[in-house]
Amino acid sequence: MLKVDHLQAAYGKVQTLWEVGFEVPNGEIVALLGANGAGKTTTLKVLSGLLRPQAGSIMLHGERIDGCSPMEIVRRGIIQVPEGRALFPEMSVIDNLLMGAYATPKAGRGMRLEQIFGIFPRVKERRKQLAGTLSGGEQQMVAIGRGLMADPKLLMLDEPSLGLAPLMVEEVFGVIKEINASGVTVLLVEQNTQHALSLSSRGYVLEAGRVVLSGSGHELLANADVRKAYLGL
Amino acid sequence: MALLEVSRLSKHFGGLRAVSGLSFELREGEILGLIGPNGAGKTTVFNLITGFIAPSAGQVLLEGKNLVGLKPHAIVRKGIARTFQIVRPFRKLTVLENVTLAAFLHERSRPKAEAKAERLLDRVHLSARSGADAGDLPLGEQKRLEIARALATDPKLLFLDEPMGGINPTEVEAACELVEKIRQDGITVILVEHHMRAIMKISDRVVVMNHGVKIADGPPRDVVQNRDVVVAYLGEGAI
Image (cartoon, rainbow over all chains, first blue to last red):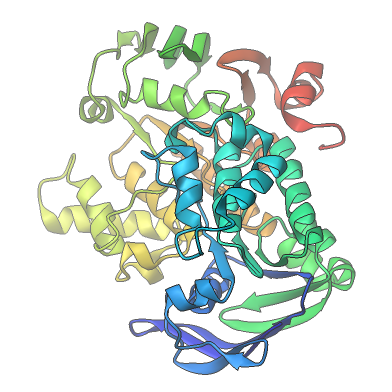
């Protein structure tokens, strides 16, 4: 579905991505792992069109999309759920969700909203509340729901477990599995390496802007370097 | 006498009891972990004690003197500094400028404030980034920048709101060492954190909140075996 090759990117003069390449097959969950500053979020920003790559290519279903505007990329079905959730705190939950459908045709919005309420009953209960008054876990659910409102083919989740209590982390990972089972391909950036890898068919490890290791979720979980560097075992 | 004494602290938002009759003490030199489910009221407690919002009822005493009613800028002068869960650096200022600004609280000369900021950036391992725009740092580094900025106000008491968000389990070890060093410098620490391994490792004592009330208070080993805490927060088999 998605194929990324030799990607390079920089913020001003500071080069963050040096050599990033990976594939996301249709229907799977793929994890991007790595220490702070390894380039995970930057990679997502480049995929979303928020940051222009300096070199390399991004192919979606065989068509190059690097250089497309964020709007165009959203229309093609690549949706990013940002780290830290980035909700509109002074807007209601339902308005936040509807913002996610901004680039999609009006028909179908109501149905997707019902699907999202089906996945997140608590979001439905709180739909009239201001998003800023929700707890962290509920906000994360709204952020994922907002991403789903854009009718994604590829949903990119940047640290969905950030700031969540242990029980809530379980719940959010359960939801990711459910979303994937409904046919949405997922690219997952996570610090919760254990959880992310046990959910993913493939994982790629980034170090200082380069992919240094890749393998199936199980292979990486068993890999001695991964265990030492990212699981703290 | 306790360094900080919180008694019957309450905050209601309309009909919602965000914090309800919360009492706890903080002894000098202690590291206290504050944990609980999302929405339990932990960040509200931070906001109440640091003056960002006013309590509906209750008392907060720092070294026996009441803090309720003081504004955040007055409370930081009394020696309580904090970080924010959603980081709030000045994104277009450099890392060094962010910390220097905070150092101006007690230091009028720019060279001296900068020298202090440089020392603190070294302490949080961010010296190499001092010239970068704060907004360009990855989240884990922005969290350390927040700690340096708080330390630049010379606190007696430091409130850390999820300092370990956005870092991986191996990096958590280094973060634990940093908190331990801050304590060795004589600063008392209270931290909200969901990384249970970190909480277990560095806290002398843990307070657990759920639905705005305290449900447990004790040494970490006892608290994680508490039935209410397992049901409300940890889940079965989390430890």
